[in-house]
Amino acid sequence: MNNNIIAIIAISFIVVGSLWGIGNIISQNNIQLSKGEGVLLFMKDNKFNVTNPDINVKVNQPLKISIANQDFRKHDFIVDELNVNTGFISSGQDFSTVIASDKEGVLRYYCSIHPGIMEGKIIVKN
Image (cartoon, rainbow, N blue to C red; front, side, top):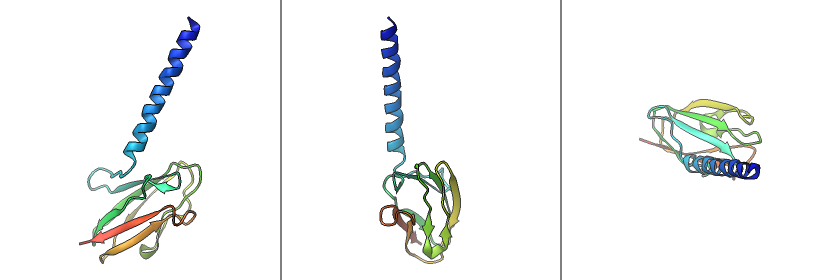
């Protein structure tokens, strides 16, 4: 009887944990905050939101970017052309900034610790 209860509890934990993990993977690909609030980026497994998504910005319209480090190592978020450098963000910490550009173009964002692996594009359009 006790073995059956332990087995049921163990299976329940496995099922709930699996569903939680799948939900996190699916929901983090291109996360946007609610309309008008900006973009949310998660740092995890040396990527931003699993796919290093493109971030679309309109010319002369500031966009809030919130960055949360869910990895076991520190990272940073840098956009050289906009003079954005968060400094190192440790595991469990987050940072918010606002970006804006007065001209169209494609800008690179990246982590200086993992350049080439952890980077994406900011696309500025009219």
